Length: 206
Image (cartoon, rainbow, N blue to C red; front, side):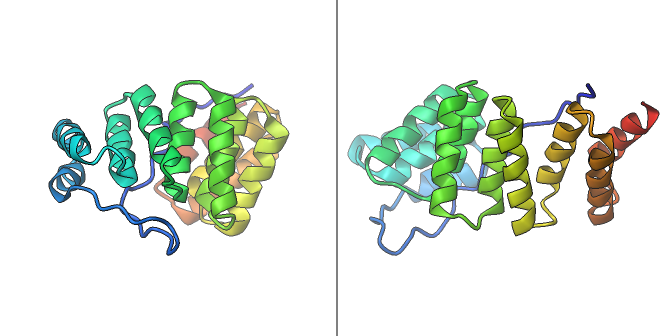
């Protein structure tokens, strides 16, 4: 088995247009500015203050969860996402980030469920298929993981993370030719990709 240590996939950005039929919530501008500046301590403080006045504001709860996630507190991150969802905040990104948070907590059943919801909301999102593939991979459901990685690549052939993790899956299965093919495709897309180049060299030395 050839392993590769990869950093976790990043959470999605928080600034999105809400679907037309979804209830509109406005968050506190100062709190969101702190988020944009990556001042997460201040963002946490300001979002908590804002939610004291508007405890049922789904967007503010989402942003608060995101801020917790950026500080590494994934338990609170997931909890505030769940609160926002119960209030009707149903954007694809919250389910993507919820899936990532549960993955960090090693709660893979919940992670898979969240990513499935993200895919159902936006079936043409390569990122959501990638997230679901990643959750399946972490849960050792390799056949399902492969299917979702490939679906992500059908939607976006330049999705480097999907190709990289798919190459890891193939290498772990001993299917080294396929792993090398995807690593070479990454280098064709991004010749400076250090992780792909290093992993390809490791396989070639086997």
